[in-house]
Length: 263
Image: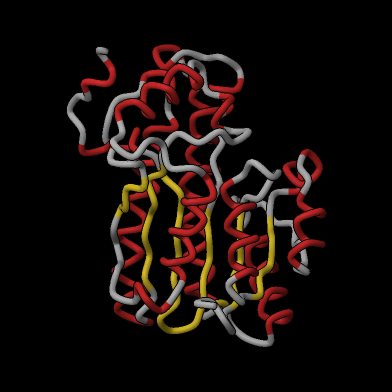
């Protein structure tokens, strides 16, 4: 078990379709202790208590846009673990504009700022809190989930694309500071389109999912495989990987065209 003895905090498990849900299950299977957390509103909507029971993990509500909530989360986590965390997963993303059907050329800017705060600035807040509280062990690992829209245009992904670009930039910038001070590594994983509750809420998701599946030599990477990748990134086997955006997409990001699309 490659996470034996390690302790981690998992943000963002909503239901059994969530990548964070799969990551939590795999962490426990590989010997880790975990704390689960999500925003209070998401906890009411989802099924996180069932996951907590399965993983024998406490659930600590926290709004990731609140420094006070994050401080309480990591303090309670350290109290529970009897020490610092070894890994953290940030699996948080939300766009009010997308939810309400606003087009990219007619965005509500207050909603856009909310999107950035929830989906990207929250990642900086998490790392800031870990830094300030000295709440993560040396050689720890922090991972956030991203998407290739940070580099390429996917029109219906709207301002979530800029959110992911900002998320990846925070990983590089804070990765320098955490690496220099504590040997903590920070990476993002750019995952295939995945049939999660959030993913399927994007306009045209089904059609794009099929397109990406045909374009990728290996096909779309499922949520379970992404969880395996996260486990590898939390383990000591990837101690010198940091400040990277790692594509986990069956080869999609490197393809120009695939004959399978025109057959």
